[in-house]
Length: 525
Ligand SMILES: NC(=O)C1=CN([C@@H]2O[C@H](COP(=O)(O)OP(=O)(O)OC[C@H]3O[C@@H](n4cnc5c(N)ncnc54)[C@H](O)[C@@H]3O)[C@@H](O)[C@H]2O)C=CC1
Ligand SMILES: O=C(O)C(=O)COP(=O)(O)O
Image 1 (spheres, rainbow, N blue to C red):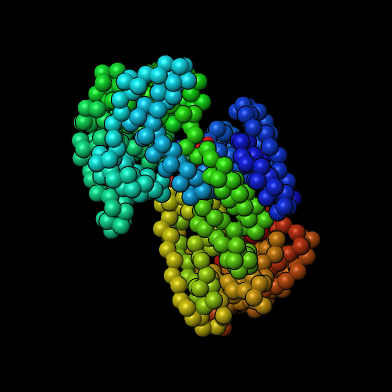
Image 2 (spheres, rainbow, N blue to C red):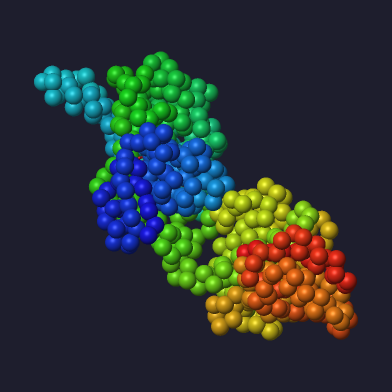
């Protein structure tokens, strides 16, 4: 039974889902990094929010971990490249809390415009300071959005309802989408110059970090009000602080901070600053949504291989997962075979999908082929990390699809180009599920892959089979299956021998020394 750790405060709905689905679950929140490292090795899955930092060090200790599920959107607390390198899938729940977070941004905008928190505190203190809290209207004001994705576009919709003029800077926002949303797409400087209220809705990335700094603030209208319900690192806090003190920025509403939990901050106590403790996603509806989703996604992945909302892997639906399963087994063998007989640097890989398989979602199949191919080089590679590793190794990967196939109902052909040569290997599924290698270097055969195999390329001359049998017999190696294939009589031939025990190096050398043998290689699957 797979085992999952919930390390942040998730709705109890998540625990219920895991248990219902047959996943063992522990809930341990507020763990120190050392404590997390000490126990993470036991778990197949980890469910988190923003508090748990899934660092390179935590991942290194997570020897059984297959999936990290973020009950929420931002994954800046997860070292996604390190997870990918280790073959850990990282998923989030991209829509479950977007309405809630957009509503918080709007609430923060109102709170700033009418100084609600201070007015509330003063009234509770019995002061009745009616003339102290003069506000500004939102009506007719320009709201500048930095980031107009899921949350930004909901904020835009609500702000348009409030009769604000909405402008947005988002390099990925298409003109058509901007038109649909009723938003004017602008450049960043234009946004800084025109916004009366400015709200941030981008992920924290190297491009967005410190996007609001002193230089940006200098371009803004005096009296601008800034709302940040995205990530603290988007704003240079000292620069904002200085601008608040000088009055250039009239107010700031901050739900997020550069360092969290923010138990102390120079913003605290300033009259024109509204702070909340990262409450953007904190409604019962949103927390129920994200907890349910993350538990479903993690369970589906661990139990059936379905992949939803992964940031580092192609999606596989619950319907596709069982259809892909026999192909993944087949191509693991094809990739493994090609990887083990490849001796020089890999330059290019082409995968041709023919017949039934061409109708499927082939991205995961390609990832598994690459993993099999690269595993002889790197033990740790798997379908998550393989495409990235292939890019790092500068291997040109391409796919071709053909709806029909001449001899089989379905066929996967792998062509591997190294510095020295190009090889092909093709496989099919017999009876719908049984992997078979059906072609090797242009020679037809029908071979089932076994744990231990010997691959021999030879000239097709009489006496070879007997001599090979004798070498193996003398070494005490029992032959389970012997597959032969050849080009026209007297040309080159292949033998793929399944054996009951591993073939030691000296036996491979003895096979290589036989007359007419061109290549011999022990293979393990
Ligand atoms: N305060 C809170 O509790 C919450 C905060 N968030 C934060 O909000 C962020 C946004 O969430 P969504 O809208 O759902 O994400 P999204 O991915 O739907 O939208 C992000 C938008 O930012 C844009 N973007 C990326 N780089 C940019 C750049 N350099 N300049 C301008 N725009 C850029 C993207 O094109 C995209 O349209 C999350 O990444 C997360 O950090 C999300 C949920 C709750
Ligand atoms: O979903 C997000 O990106 C959030 O920032 C929400 O964070 P939280 O789950 O409330 O710690």
